[in-house]
Length: 140
Image (cartoon, rainbow, N blue to C red; front, side):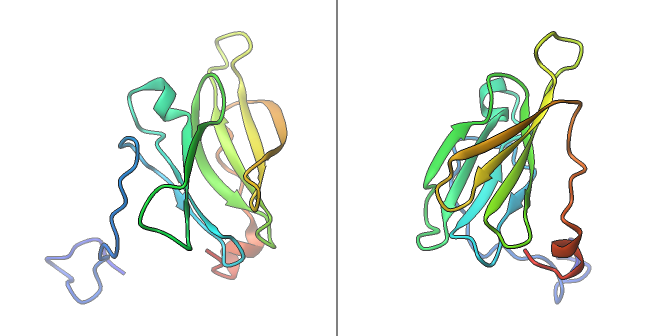
């Protein structure tokens, strides 16, 4: 695939659907074949609340956002990563290590219920968490 529709129209990325989010600034979108959801962030939004807000879109009705929520009370929510079987989603919450009590975290969600399961605290910009199995086997 190419990102240049003028220079490579036969292999360029094409929008297949546009879904209105609460705001702009999305950096990551992620799903898994076993998941009913598509997860979306708004990490690059200049509004601090929206930058830490994530949304899910139901694959059964991809015409609208199903639910949005704040991952934390500070920071930016970014980089979704599924476990191998698609039952958990790990979300990075970037903090500000210079501010007491605002270090980064990884927040783990149950993919079916969207309920928070756990937090791995006291990390600094925890983005580099990759499920090697899913990456090597193109499970997206």
